[in-house]
Each structure stands twice: as structure tokens, then as C-alpha cells.
Length: 245
Image (cartoon, rainbow, N blue to C red; front, side, top):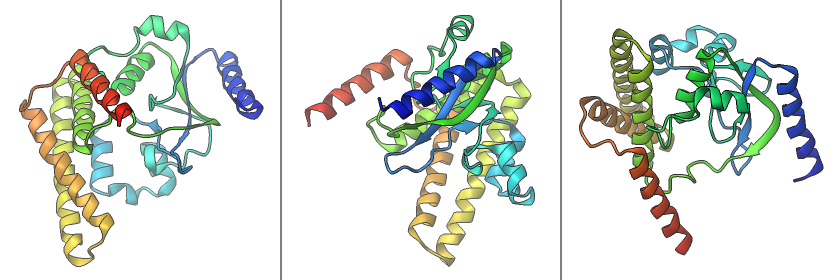
């Protein structure tokens, strides 16, 4: 590891040592082309879903929208406390791991860090984003299969989080808000594709329809949800197949 990167990593450790309330720190992630990945996140909420999916965040102003929503609304250019960080790279205190039992064994891939960070914060710890360290993250490398398969895993993780941590009413409202938001996105980009067609608009339309169909199917219980062990075996097999090609 280059000396500069080593010093930066030690800086993050020093930050945690200086702030005993910090349980998790997530670094700045970039893809192989150097583009920043949105790794600082907020926990799901009905009002956040509506703000994002229906474009209502535009009425807030850029600064407030960035603070309330984080993710790709925030430039990831400063250290701050967040609700959770993407699990591709997390610095976690040993004490936090043993106190909260680590990742939920029911989630093998996608959504496990959000669920764990929820329990970490409920245990009284703080979670922070720290851009002093930059890590290159090759997105999707852990799941060498179709985008549709990865999307389904992510949506299943979202629904599992709601079922485990939301109230009955909150869960129902969240499910409806997600469905309504995806339907609105599909309709909006469908109209836009007729008026101003482009590759970007087509991709957004396809994504919205895919996520909407999958979300409704998952909520309805259609399709068997693979367990953690089954997914691990499937992914291991896929990765081994890729290595041989």
C-alpha cells in the first residue's frame, strides 16, 4: 500500500479513537473510472420515498434535499454522520460487532449493511462517512449474474428490512409508497420517451418497469426467496465459472 494511503487509513483509525461514540466509518468509494459512488445513505421512510420518486425534492432546494436524502443527492465531499454506509468497505469497532452480532444471516447479499447499521444505531452508536480515504469499488463483482437478479436481491433486502424493523402500518405505507413511486416513474419516463427519446430515458423507463414488476411480485410472495446458504452456493458456483473463462 502506498505511504499516502497508509497514512490516510491510519487517520481514519485515529478519528475513531478520538470519537468513542463512533461505531462505524465508511470511506469514499469510487468506481474504476474514478466516479464517486453514493455510499452515504438515509434509512428508508415513506416521506423520503415520496420526495425522491415523485421529484418533490426539487421544491426543497439543493442543500436541504442533499441533507435529507443523501445518496446521489449529496456530493460526498465532507465528513458527516449518516444513517448507514454501503458495506463494500466499512471500518467497524470490534466491540460493535460482538454487541450487535454482525450481519443478519438471513441476508447474504444486498441490504445486509443497511439492516446491520439500523441495529448498530439502535444500540447507541454513531455511523459516519469519512472522505479522507478513497477506495476503488468494482460494483457488482460479488454477483456475476444479470442486472435483474441483482435488482431482485436488493428489493428483497428492502422488504426484509421493513418486515423486521417497521411497524405494521409503516410497512404497509412503505410498500404502497414504493409501488406508487415506481409506477409514477414508469409513466413519466414512458411519456418522456415519446416526446424526447434518448438512451438515458429508455434505460430509466426499463428500470422503473422492472423494479415495479419485481416489487409487486415480491410483496405478493411470488417466487421462492432463496436462503442465505443457497445464495452463497449459487454465487460461489458463478464466480468459479467466471474464473475458468
